[in-house]
Length: 202
Image 1: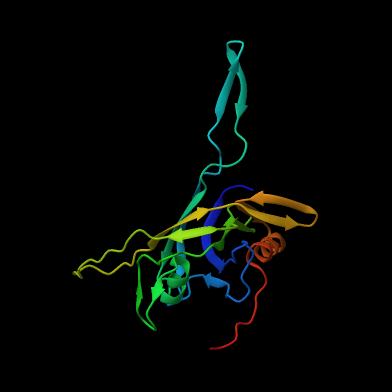
Image 2: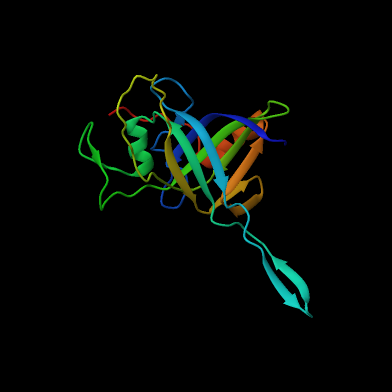
């Protein structure tokens, strides 16, 4: 795979306490449909653990670098629907149209898949954060002026945790997964987010 190009879709689903997909919850998808939210940016950090050198015999004898660092992803999300934002951030709700941040605000564990494409081939590429929690540090307001209005994306931070993932006969504790090609991206989304289910009305 070369570099990626674009950010077409972000999908998320709440996880249960054992970090498996909660099939009573919807798979939330934002892909730039007007009024339904869309992704603008994605920056994944902390994939490599800081190397620690061990010395012996007055020389660098061994380098320890197994595992990952503190994995986090910074998302730029534009026009996130209130229902989805309440779910991502675990906001306190007071009925329709009123929510709050407070002592009982508790974001749920969530799995997230960000989709792009390969710069050289145009094939689908996906990054999956298999478990973790979102936070948003703040909001800002600005006065209207004579300039054309350009909306800005909200900044959401996802802090990742490890989760046991099984594909075929292989099981590993992982934080981030990556897939290339249509079939593999679809398979990855199913493994990480679970299957689509019909949520009863009401």
